[in-house]
Image (cartoon, rainbow, N blue to C red; front, side, top):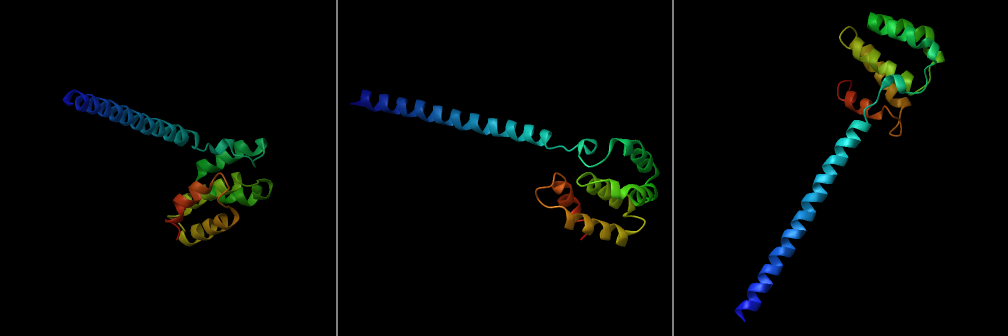
Length: 134
């Protein structure tokens, strides 16, 4: 009888160890998948649709000039640019403008937030900046 109890205990330990291994393996796979998803979810602004290729160089020049350059660029070319790229550029403008004119930055941010929704590729950035401009 003691041999039967010992065999049952050994089988239970082996089964428990196997289940523990499977659980550990699933957690490890979830972590790797989350890391890959985080890397894949990084947005490259230059790859967002909505900006004609001919305006890319002028946008880069405006970004080097800071808030003033972006404001002038948006006034000049804003009608030719579509969302989501236009919203991303306006968020860059908000960040650059926040020290000089916080009320204007808040107004522009609220305009972008109203235009974009959870399905937008820039929604994550809007949510990250929301605490700053509330």
